[in-house]
Image (tube, rainbow, N blue to C red; front, side):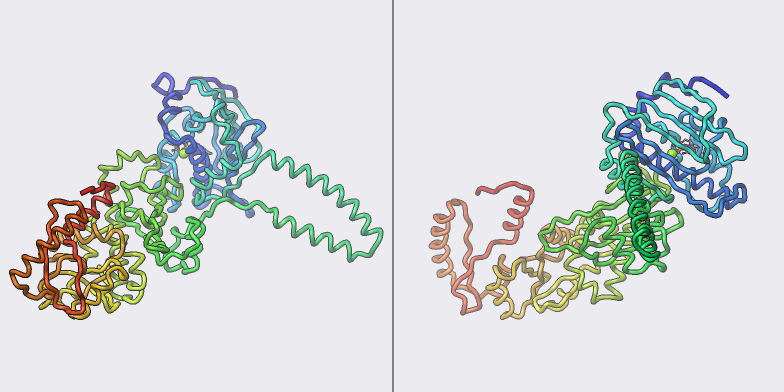
Length: 583
Ligand code: ADP
Ligand code: MG
């Protein structure tokens, strides 16, 4: 067989388009080619389950990624289904005809539930983003199949002829172009494999051919040396010495055994009942390199009305000043799509760390397309619902832990309530506040306890030390206050006031309510106001300063200065948005 022909596409030359526009991240070709290898294996496994292919007893499916820095090549080898000449014609020569889609169509009712990754039909051609020339060597699993060699140098012409591949499967070789040599750098290549392929469902091995050759050379040298020693040992001593040498050899071999770079059964694919706490923690360390233990986690596991699995971790925040920055990794059938896609994951959930696998999501996510996608909205709502259920459930049935974690999880919950109406509706009754006695109360609890005295005012403390004088005053009057010490609290109380217009939050050092004041003689007030106004205006340099004099009930305290809640909050907001207030 020898054949030449034109790639059957309508467009004049699709390569410039593929190169420029198909994917914004060039490194994605590695994901595409490795996932094609995994697909090829998955297909063969399916055929085996259906009795159309007989697996060898010691069948070991794998995908190998080989780099050769000297030759500037990258090779992807799988021992999957392979392709016949006709199949190469159909699946490769017709660009954008997705073989995966055809396969699924053909076997959709008989197949097991193993998933096939590709469904886009352009994955293979992403190789041309980085390669001048690509070759395929493939041998189909079908009995009596002829191996096929295919090559294309990035024009619209390809060459196809009988090949010499002796083992079942497919080898794809990329001859990297000048701008893409980085991809045959071991460090870079491993980094990309880690990013996209860490959880793909078939074992993946990485080989640096240069290093491999070096090692082989060294091993051969060592072997030769050892033979000499061997002979020495035998000459000098008994058989005992001989067996010791053998033992060492074995140990070394075990250390050298290549390990797959991926986990083919990531924890989220298991049923929550089959996962132990230790496994969850280990997975967290592995994936997020965070050696602080997570507080707790939610394992999402849903088949209907869409398929979604994943684990969301609530990270431990060390101090309240830590910037909280999570990562949610998105997968499609164990193939990494991207981090932190705001369209799928509600923004406030991005403070968490986790993995979400949703096979119904397209691999090639265009963010703008996702924005108005009803399906994506459903996913996002589902996640919100699950997280709210977990948290409110914990508050109801495991209040002790809920309170223990509150300091860490409250910024996240508050942010969620501010940003997401649905989340707010589900969580608003489970917001708790620490009061002056160190007990946790809800807003209604607090208001109810102080019904007579507080007049729907909620007094709060932001700094126990700086506000200690006021705290004492409150204690004396037997008026409770709650602690609000997180940065988000300023915004959060405004949010609460908007939703509960009858409630007003007052920091304990802001304007005093009547509980603390005594009536003051009119003349005395006038005199003091005039005197103090002058002093304060002079001190602050603010001409239109308004000074108000009030008399405290507490005689122990000679005087105190308060700033109105509104004025202070305003300047805090300005500060937060980076505006300075010079007046
Ligand atoms: P998709 O994976 O979305 O179908 P691709 O462009 O990645 O699109 O691949 C096109 C088709 O080529 C695949 O569906 C498959 O039939 C065939 N193919 C690609 N790579 C391999 C491979 N390693 N082994 C067997 N078939 C392959
Ligand atoms: Mg593909």
